[in-house]
Image (cartoon, rainbow, N blue to C red; front, side, top):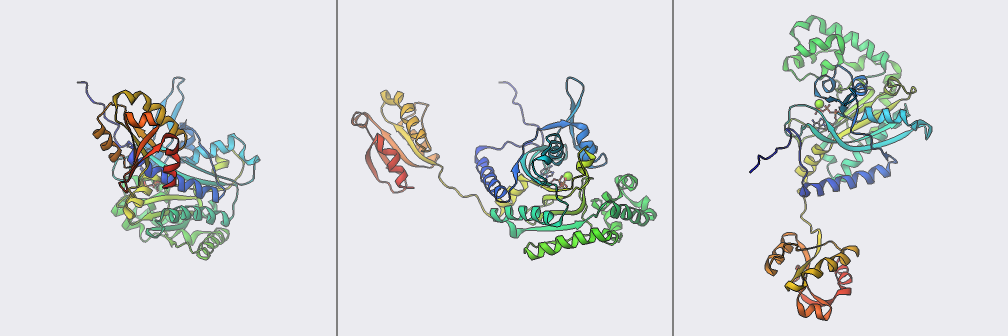
Length: 421
Ligand code: ATP
Ligand code: MG
């Protein structure tokens, strides 16, 4: 026997039993997105590497160590997208979406790729669902896009087990003054900080607040709060967001230490976490990115967005309500006589085209085995076809729920089954 090929570490096969749960989630999501007037966008899976280096930031975990990059035959460096905000903004600029309307509300779903250490809820290929509202600088837009994710959680029935953490990193002037204040505070502790944080002290000191190293966390505890460095207009923006969230009954907690792992954020940043998960408890992260469109060569257009990990969302849905085992099969055709097998595909084709979910045996198995298969697929009915039935133009229709069985004409089968729905 040849050696079996295993899948790559940290990626998943989504098998049909799980795919039905993904489809359920996708249905909920696309309905909610339509209610909020967001249109779906499907950018490519790979982009030029420089797109991510310039937007996500050279010094972030993603760009410094997690990207799957490769050279194509022309020697161009390409990268499998580690996130999709950069791709959406690139597409927004390239396709002049601003001309269509001053606010573009977009959503996406698809696989992302990051080379990190695989564990529960952390994979190398994982799926994100995300939304971006490009064009409005105002707090109403911040609140709407947060409310959008909240609505998805409500429709999935998991809003109560999820909490929203929120913070503001202010505009660039506020961040600049905070950067200085933070560096002044950290300077005496520089030697005690982890190696990564020491490096970030110069390049991106705000990222030190996000450090997981216990000793770093101990030092950070007493650091000045970004809130105290926000200028008047940044404070005003933030307070309006909090006020509107309160009025909408969307619960939140302010988290002074929240900084997100990407460089492009300004003003409002937020994260949704769930107690139903272990260490990887973040199910959604997002924030405003008012400078990114300009930095990627577009006009000076403000924007805000979020991205949510679908595997983690499904883990929460799973933990809270076990998957229901409902029947997805209406009818199984059981062929009793050998010489009738050749008619089976034609018969079942008619039923399928009429909208029934049905199946039949292509292995020439015994009648008993066919009934067993019908059972395994949890069919609601079996249509048993023997020589007598065939000559009379009927099938024996067996209702598995009630045990009833009666002869039904071929052309009445669909109607009969539909009547039982
Ligand atoms: P984390 O702190 O868990 O690493 P992150 O800050 O890197 O998250 P983002 O880049 O903001 O995450 O991505 C948004 C969401 O995507 C996360 O909240 C999470 O639900 C999901 N996510 C991120 N990385 C992974 C991964 N490797 N596997 C599965 N889901 C992920
Ligand atoms: Mg990460």
